[in-house]
Image 1 (cartoon, rainbow, N blue to C red):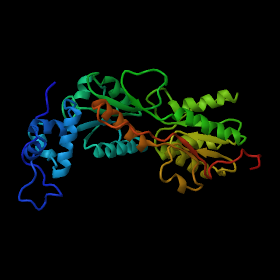
Image 2 (cartoon, rainbow, N blue to C red):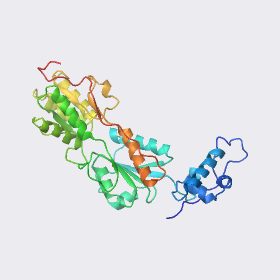
Image 3 (cartoon, helix red, strand yellow):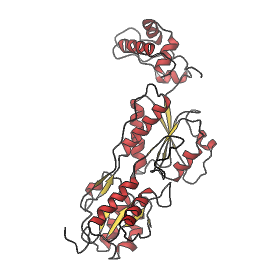
Image 4 (cartoon, rainbow, N blue to C red):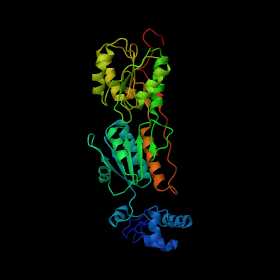
Length: 360
């Protein structure tokens, strides 16, 4: 395995040594620690080929002298740069944007740089296509695979690349995949939300779906179907929603006009906004005549009228955990254990209530 190149001379001055006539160099650290400057470079770049005692001694000297390697100079010299490329099809979708934020926060804390490559929604994805999107050949990859383009990129990624994906809940949760994946159990969360609506006396629950990467209507739809089937209730045909409030509104107009429809579970909060608007236009009282539940707990969910009952998902924590998994994959001997993310949680607000004719 090729060793990291030495860090060049032009380092940043340290905070402690700002009053010195020159900045602390890698050679100063090497001399004080009694090692070669190549060894200091390996420690700085996280190479596993350094004995623990030596690593500890070098790190102690780095701390004492206030040495701070210049990352730009290291890159220009062809040295090892701690970086990761994130592949995603849409940085504006709520879950993807928060997962990306979590990845960036965790990467920054670990002193990794992050490059983002946005995937084409329609283009086919081959191994060469994926490789061409990386900032540096063969560098680590994180894929946000909540929808079809991300899923295609994840499966096309060559196996020799160190990689982790943020995905929908896998179909086979107990199966051991070839590569690590991070996910939230939104199938169980959707089942919980559906059971909650049934507990309020609703005979059944309609579901408005978001696009999925794993099934025609997604894991949230599977959880909704599980709960209805287990309760022996009718399972209506899922409604094809989309992502936006407008798509939710257009789909809901023909549904909420039916007084037999008393409860709607939406695949995200934006669809729920469209349902609330369509219900108002149709003269349906929410929650007196119609209960509406969203998914994600976007920041506006508690401020709609009525305030939206929804499922809270920890996308930022998921992103931090995914980066932690990748860091551990790259440096199992030194990277900390990946942080855990919160389980989905049903947040009950004002948009749900007893079925018509049932008292609170």
